[in-house]
Amino acid sequence: MNPYEATTAAATNVGEAGATLNGTLAGGSGKAYFQYGTTATYGASTSAQVVGVSGSPRPFAAAVGGLAPGMTYHFRLVAENSGGVVYGNDQTFTTDIHSDPPRPPCCGPDPGKPPRVLLVQNVRQSTTRWRQGNRLATVSRAKTPIGTTFSFLLSDQATVTFSFTRRVGGRTVTAGRLTFTGHDGTNKVTFQGRLSPKKKLEPGRYTLVITATDPAGARSAPKSLSFTIVQ
Picture 1 (cartoon, rainbow, N blue to C red):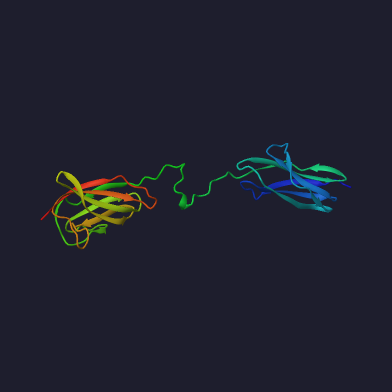
Picture 2 (tube, one colour):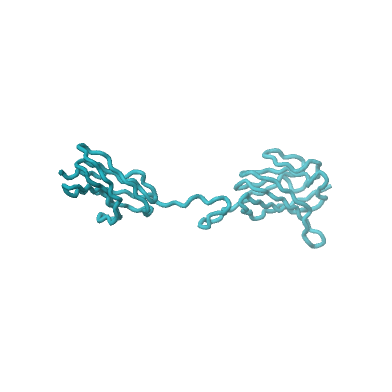
């Protein structure tokens, strides 16, 4: 019986840990398999498959697994029958490099990366001395109403807290707070001294402390402004 004609073809379906080895066979009945390994001496082989008689080349394939990611492998087709053993040409392929899957939201930030820094910047107010009005604080991108307009720049969307403090009897006390959602970019808050429909700041000198916290829990460094409310 004539020996096989064996040709090794390119590998397909190459992933991190596996690939499909391909080739073509022509000749009498017998068996065929692939040898593979990280060098041209191979060292491993697929299971032998029985093949029948074929006068023209026909495809032959076998899947391999358990490979290392990011590694180059050699392989060749081997065919055997009563006419002898035939070795196909050597081919190579490289497995994909392993990449970590995205971390789910429950697990927090990747410990290998520096924590994201939330910034509050460019803190300003339109005037430092003003009279009270009756409007509640509102977020505005442009208008400057009676009272003052606080403006600041956020690096990301975050929950912003305004803490209004003043000196009373030699100590600092908090007169009130406002909390709202700020957008990334420049924010403007119009303020006429009212903290709620029933509560307002009394005339006097105050310090506004601005802090922000993003959805991931990152907290900004505090920024402050001073102003005076007159009657």
